[in-house]
Length: 164
Image (cartoon, rainbow, N blue to C red):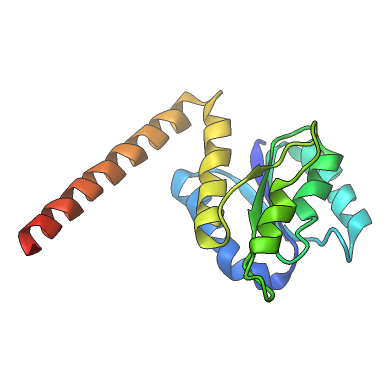
């Protein structure tokens, strides 16, 4: 079965990353969410990636804060697409995680999205877009979602014009 794997570095990341899971539910995309740290449980993380690929993982979303090595560790263990979500934490509020996630060496790509909730949602959308390359039904759902968002913006704009 094809699915997307969401790996979070710690339990504290769940509150933000549940937005990613909710987006997958909205589109009917199967996913698996686990907690596994690149630093505290590197062997477990590597073993999970291999098992997930065998079960049908099509892409990995890795969310972590602070040093944020998780996405890089995942990318090192797979040739599947990896999307990194920097988590806001520590004194730098996620800027360190953003830089750690985006600054990968050539040949080890990690698609990096925004820090926090917007990143969690956009990581799901990016993974859905990857799946939609070979799934016409999912592609149509994405197009319909985009149209409905555009209509909402138009309606919101009209309300603002009336208020002003």
